[in-house]
Length: 200
Image (tube, rainbow, N blue to C red; front, side, top):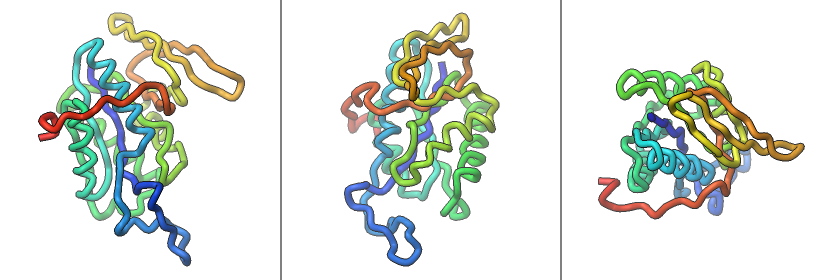
């Protein structure tokens, strides 16, 4: 099983400042962290690898400093990390971001095998749009399972996955074919403690 997790490095929300004129987030001088929702996606990917074997690839798009967050993801036990970086990506909206991420996932698939599952957090704490996961799924032609609160069962032989999805009316139980993209809700698991040796 090959799992790709899309992760984002974001400003620490406790120290965010907003520009008084442009009303945009001022990132300079603000410490960065892994998007908290993405931590649940990383942990879920690692749990599935532990259960079924395979590999976990972490993908992020951002400045060169995002390497710090990738090293942290590697310390949790991911097999590899990919940094997609270019000055032209600065200020990319969700349309451009989904195009770049989907293109990178296709390239990763040719190098390491196409992913069975692509994980994202439900949204990021800086953009807060929840559009990137569904946008990547659309560009890759993947079935998308959003707001997933629990993975019930994975049947690799049949190529299906059973999940619980939170909705306004309650909880939906869904079965989907793989490959698919899953956006994970917060609180579905508890992140493991990283190892320094795994990040080297």
